[in-house]
Image 1 (cartoon, rainbow, N blue to C red):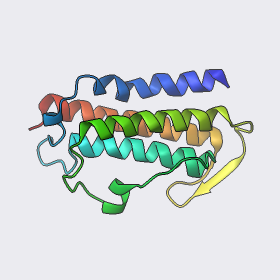
Image 2: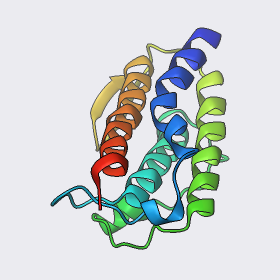
Image 3: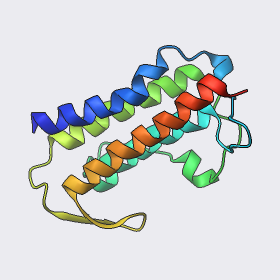
Image 4: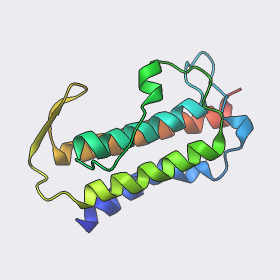
Length: 145
């Protein structure tokens, strides 16, 4: 189990290592015609991690209000750096707990978003989802206006 947690945590550093250098003025930045700001991307990653912790891995302690998914687009409201960082930290704590509480990685879960997957495949999916958006965030922070 420890190895899976370490694998997930290492993959997540592509996202979390960027957060120490973000300033409030970076949050509204976008890249070219991209629809998503840095603040939106940060909020979205945390929300999806919380959703996986709760709905995929069964951590029922999780409370999540998936604002970015409900809005379906960047509304420009995700500009409070402290609250975004706090949400990312909470998502990390809750997803780690959820991963640590798994025992049958071959059991199948099903969601409307990605169909049927083993829990192991779902772990791969959330890890790559975070890394994918971490790449977008890095580009927005480097080149965005």
